[in-house]
Image (tube, rainbow, N blue to C red; front, top):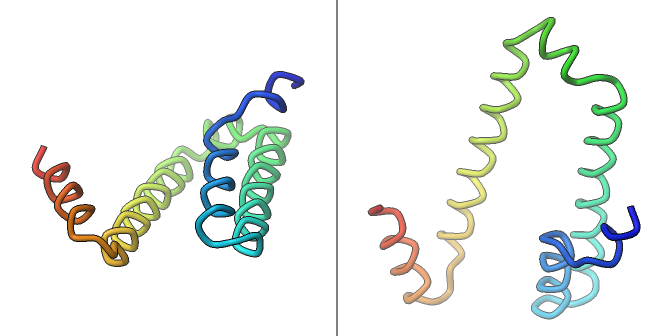
Length: 97
């Protein structure tokens, strides 16, 4: 637990980037979202998500599909809101692979 607190991870970099680019309000909203997501994962882990998935395998497919569609939605929003043509070109180049 201690190393998780002192080592910067993706959540730290996400919140820091929002703080630097958009200000403290945006960083606070992001940190609340990260905290909520962590809380959900902790609760699901405690309740035995693997047991539920073994009993109802379709729920795992539903949850995985929802996650995939959410990631696609986020990538669409990032592409749509890209202010720089070079960013759009990089995204298009990445999509060709």
